[in-house]
Amino acid sequence: MARTLREAANYILSLPSHVQKRREWQTAIEILIGAAEGRDFMLHAWIAMKQALGKDKPAPESPKKRAKSYRIIR
Image 1 (cartoon, rainbow, N blue to C red):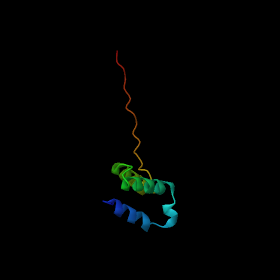
Image 2: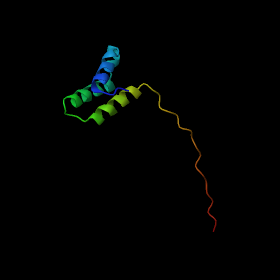
Image 3: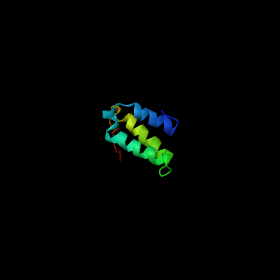
Image 4: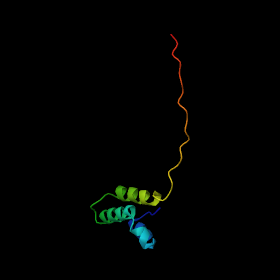
């Protein structure tokens, strides 16, 4: 993961243009520019980068557990 705004910008610029045009990358670019200009928080830029990087990964499958059944004894 990039440690500075410059590293994040260089990473985005190294991506193919069709990837850069995706909605999640456009959002990350806008927030990175805002953080560089002092209009946005660095945390928002970090979150936007994490979301854009994780967009292509499939969601982890959660193991389905059966709910416990209880008997009421009176």
